[in-house]
Image 1 (tube, rainbow, N blue to C red):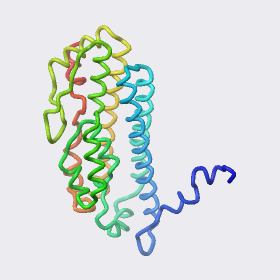
Image 2: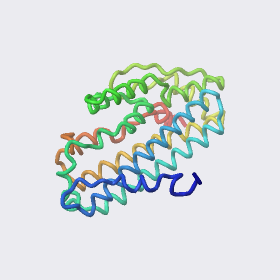
Image 3: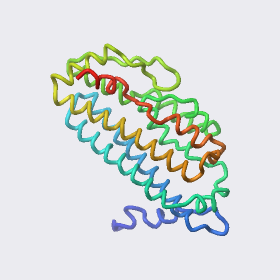
Image 4: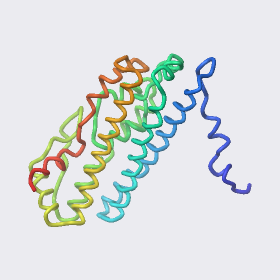
Length: 259
């Protein structure tokens, strides 16, 4: 078969994936589906880039790690900007089809949970939301055994002659407690090794970008459904607000006052 734009990208199949549940069909349900399907595609790409980033860090490759992180940061900005599109939908327009969504909820996004796990987070909700899907549980548990971004970065530092080890101390929340020893090493790096310092600052950029995404997401939900429960019975805004301003690389933030 001749390779064409249409069959290579499976366009015919792609544009059939927006199956509305509202009856009669509500105009804005198409937007709602497309936005969230697009998010999932970007989550897939971020996980793909996480894999490359961890491999490059493990090998001690600075500039390919920098390049990969910059791509991830650009994708994160795209995720944030997509909230602008979703916010063109008013509460009345969303509620015109919300009842047709059943128990589906963004809390059930498997790929976003995988991203959080690789960022070092461990939350009871991660497994609870997938308790009826054994394949998902197995996938999440497998991710929990993989090296996190922080572990990969500290492995990179060690390879560069700055011994640093992440110790998994927590079963819920962020795996790691802030470490005075690691912070001392990071201060030394920031003062004396500009290439590694650049990479460290990109990790801070990613941490900040993730917090920005969480903030925009919670404000979008709040302006759309207020304080009501989320679809699927989740806490909605009340839960999402708890996740704002939780740094995933606290040691990199702690050293800001040392300069």
